[in-house]
Length: 232
Image (cartoon, rainbow, N blue to C red; front, side):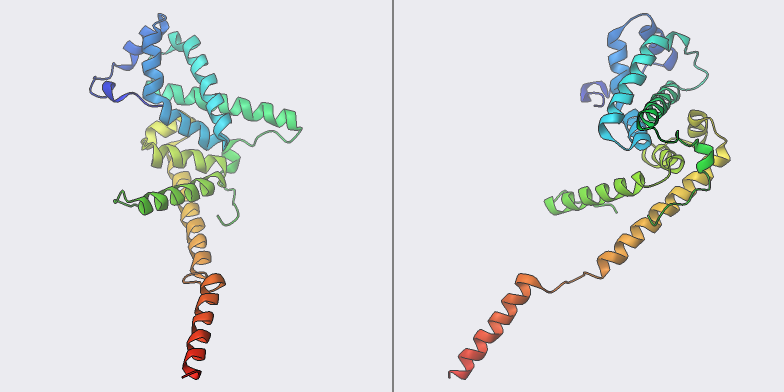
């Protein structure tokens, strides 16, 4: 849930100021902080965990950690970046716990995924219902394809493309070089284009499909007309 519309015209406090207010126990300031960053941080958690419920739980864990530790925020990075690091840590902790419970190999570090390959993986201005449905379907398709990406590429793509963070912000958030951010983002876009192109190829084979009730209706109509003609 993002900030209510009534707050949108209120100038944002600077990071250190709001951090000091939260550190002093100001829950109103903390509520404002959460509403301000909820969407960005949830998207980051969702991109990491690929599960709506787990992402929401991880976000809550990160906020609790922020409430307890924000006194240590010194402003060396943006508050949003500091919070993003907490979310990533909360997500990774959940992944490790899940791996132990499932008795599987622990999660692979993001750096080892740099060269990992995966299996083959529009904008509508009108608000008409059919356009809204088309947007929803396209969004669902893209989300599925993003979920299929390796974690390293998926997270960078969401931060850069969806949240529009700069290369420097992403690099600081993930503690990786800017060059790595650029290469992962380029690779993520290539994977997404390839996956969507394959979906289009599959759909093309079914364009203007003619069968079922449609076919039966035409056949029946032709036979009816033949009978009518023969009876003349």
